[in-house]
Image 1 (cartoon, one colour):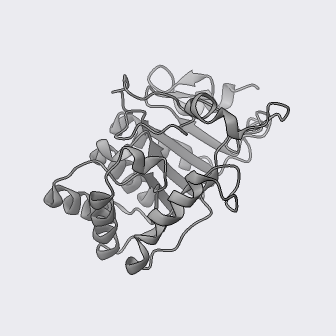
Image 2 (spheres, helix red, strand yellow):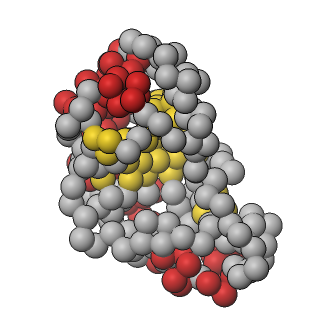
Length: 250
């Protein structure tokens, strides 16, 4: 086994970079021109192959807004469940439709496919462009479908800082009180993409910020598939995932 990936235990999919929000904190920058998404059959095949050779403990889907392509998300989680991956999470901003019938349908699809937990991104940044009412209804539907939900806000500077964005985030989180949804740790914004463009006044130019999501290239614990199939400096539309893993070098 390749020594650089021998500890691999997690799979992630950026389902799409297309998004329903235009958040000024987004590390990916402007999402307006994105429409690409990963193909369900390619994703499912990669999961099956990896799980036959590695002890994968967790899988996550996110974006962009992954629920713009709910059938893809569901196929990924359905395959992960079938392969015995215990922790299967989804990050979403909860806004992919205003149609209540469709929202409820997608919530039930997610439950049927085996999604264990949904991390719902709600905060001052998302709600600048995303209406709260359909997000709250989505939360109600997934709770009714039996899926665990946590609110996952983005904090500026720190969770404790009392800047205007954090104050607004706390007000938005209060809107979910009646649903008794726990508030997770969320994440602290780092200066990349839109954040460095629109929120620069909140960052110290003398500090070198590191992304909390970067992997140690010499000890890969998680592999992340991009919407175009890119992973570990190669692509699953051109090469078998097991060959990519075996041939990977930092």
